[in-house]
Length: 255
Image (cartoon, rainbow, N blue to C red; front, side):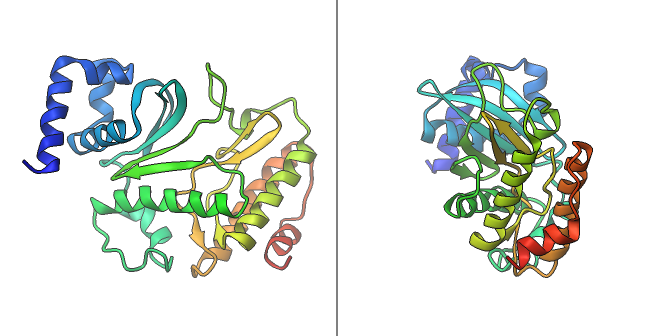
């Protein structure tokens, strides 16, 4: 029996027994909305490989992905599942085409989701090696990404947009420092950076959602970076910290 058929058979047994559903801590209606057959098989493979004991609670759910806190030997981790049905070619192709690291990939409606998961894993790995503060990538399979968890036992670290009592001058400096490391050391641009995908935990920032991040050699890299800078400057302006986006952009690119 092939490994795929073997996985499908084992998965079917788990689903029918209810054991697999219990791992997710979800009701059957929610479970059915999130997981199609291909995703179930991918998740099952990750569960086996990384000894996932339980899906503890959902962290976030968007149009293109869902994120769960999971437990592996009581260690909290994060699983991010890219939705097969809603991650659109039109929304992602601009960030793949033009990035030399993925330019040889054959894109279609199915494998673009798998490429996206691998791309986020690759981006996180390269950013972490460059000293950028990101969750630690631990592995991926098909449309499922596993990484370190940031937060307490009861709740994940908040997005920067929800943070109130903090020194925003220090936070701005940390964000800018990480943008410089990303550009100069990793050779990457986030391409969707804002207060929505920066976490703040124990006086430290963590940059997340890096699937769309591109090489600085991408033809639109500087356009993406300018957008990132504008987003960041706009957020901090609302916190009373006024910065000139053009000066910030040049400080990143020119050093």
